[in-house]
Image (cartoon, rainbow, N blue to C red):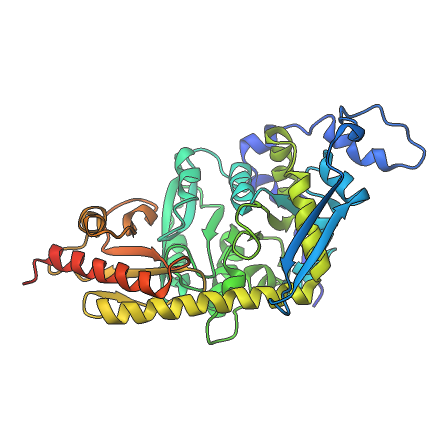
Length: 435
């Protein structure tokens, strides 16, 4: 089937007022002209690289195919020079090209389909810029509930009307989304964006099925909204069933593409401190994001992009995938240890569904009749017992009480898992008043 991207003018109603008001950088907008043969540039106030003291950077890394082997990568010459200087707002061309190749290999998306990429200082960076480029103060926004607590302040600062879409063990509920949209008051503008974390959702750990994703994409077309696909745990999938395709990939099944903004992160698979993520999506929306970057920070640091590219380029795509499979297997083993601990200590004190991706457990405390609030148990009883977790209320877009708790299992060894869940068991028993 021929891929038909939505036209550029389609996105004008989706851009926020601030995005429409933002003007291109008068300097950075001319950077591409510097590569014209024979041109002498007096444009940019770039420092002279001869004054930079760094002459080379040596990286050592474990081999993805044989972790017992260590490989050495040296960044020097032209590559280092690029990393030490100002670079393009959207990201260094070398890293951007690597990402294009990755999105084609993993999601089947090719250049020429109306989308491009932009590199950010972690995916949170480009998510924030996307929100600011699309959402106006007071807008209604569709948010799966419970939702990643780190994104809620973005919408709350804009005083958005957060419309909760239910989730369950199969991810976002397309039926809940349909009911919300079909009962929407005719006098009120419908939401133009849905925020969702489809793999290993933080906090629930749930992964949306392919059927649910297709239904959400169909609703996006019929009710005219964009999907913010925040997917930092895509490469941490360890479920027994085949990995469901991403929204970005599934969109190719429809007559037109261009309703998905996909956010990827290297934090969980390379380094959280290196702060490299990227967004893939329609050209007009990426332009708005880049204009934000140009005035906020000029660009994502060139040096971290150069280091990241040097590692990824030395591996190639197959070795990168091998590495991610090793990472997901690591977290599956962590999940299994935590699951054993939950069964041992909380089998009669909590309800849960084991996650298939990511690093979180989302479980409901069975506190007894008329007790549906985990807040005091976690912040008081559990803390006094020596265990720290997050009460579920911080993940509810509109606040409120909940008996749910989020626990991360990414760092603990088996002994600490056993101790933590034993202490949590004691805290729940105390709260219930069991004798």
